[in-house]
Structures are given as C-alpha cells and as structure tokens.
Image (cartoon, rainbow, N blue to C red; front, side, top):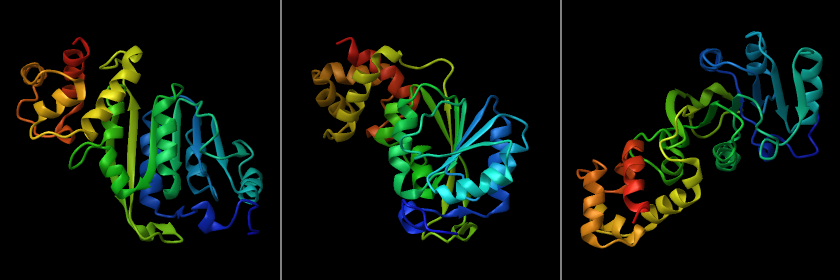
Length: 254
C-alpha cells in the first residue's frame, strides 16, 4: 500500500481492527439503532463490509486516499470519501468508528457538541471508554454532557485484536442522545461552566466545593446538596447524572 500524503500508519494512528468478535459486536450494536450510518476511519473496510450488510445507507470516511480508492472498488454501494474525522460533518443518525487513539478527545468533543446524530458506537482506548462510561467515577467531560447523553461501556478489546498491535487494549463505548434532556439545552453553557468549576474547585466536602463553584453561602450549599439527594457523595466525581441534574436548578436559581 503506498504511503498517504498525510503520513504513514504511525502518523495516522492506524490500528486496524481484526478481532472478529468485536466486529460482530459493533455491528450488533448498530443494528439496534435506525437511520443512516457514518463510519469514521474505515481503513481497509473490515467494519464497513459488516455495516453494509445491514441494508441501510452507509457513508464511510478515511484520511488515507489510497485505502479509500481501493475500498470504493470493493464496495460500490457505499459512499466512501477522503476526509478528516476531526473536521467532517457528523450528520448521520448513527456514527460508528474505530477512533485513532491520538485524536480520541477532539472527536469526542465534536460529537458531544454536535446536534445531528442520535447514537455513537465508538472503539477507543480502554481507559477512555471506561472513564467516559463513569466506571470508577465520573469525569468532567462526561458530567458536562450527561444531561443530554447517556454513556455505556459495551466491552473490552484485546490489543492483539488490532493490526499493528497498540500498547493498550481498546474499549467499546456507546453514546446515546437522551430523548428528554435532564437540563434545558438553553442552560448548557452555564451548566458546563458550573461543572468545570466543581471539578477544578477545592473543598473538604461536596458542599464546600458547591459553595465555592456556585459562590453560595455554606448553609445554602449544604441545602442544595441535600435537595439533590447527594448528601452521601464526597466529590464531584461521585455524582451520577441525576445528581447533577437535580443540583443544577438548586444552584442556578441562586
């Protein structure tokens, strides 16, 4: 395969999925959704072929022009384009992809800021998938998005299931847009700023962190935490989406 004008495998972060059980699992997860499909980073088309068998419109993109040219010939029924996943419009109801590990965060941020998709099935680094799904505690990015999206961890992929083999395992992360947001979309910017202040603030207790982040008297912060059902939680990372959603009106109205 000729070298792409954008670089070789290392520069492009190309670790192609060869693990058949994972290919089948991703296809199964996508089959539970409806609507057209956009695949990010189709590579040699191992997943693209499975998605095409679902009988739904499929578009696939890859930054490697040589692989795109070859895959177009193999799959004439799929729209395949040369494009950068960090810039291409995320304009399909279902977004799927084996995400290059070095651009995982930018792509996730774009997804969570976009309003044109309903389901995302992503193969990322194991620790990224685990953290985004809230296993072992929530992260700021997940907490900022939780009122509008649900995250679930759907499996672990061994490093040897990729070619070339990366240094870490992969993880299957599914993100679903909530039908009924827990916080009004009009509040999103202010809510995200509050979550950021919570995760970057200090305090010996959750109430103390809330008091600092929301600039409230300590007594008001304690009442807000109790009203949100979070009295037993110690840190922002311990809060569940329902806690954040219940806490927000308590602090925003003050």
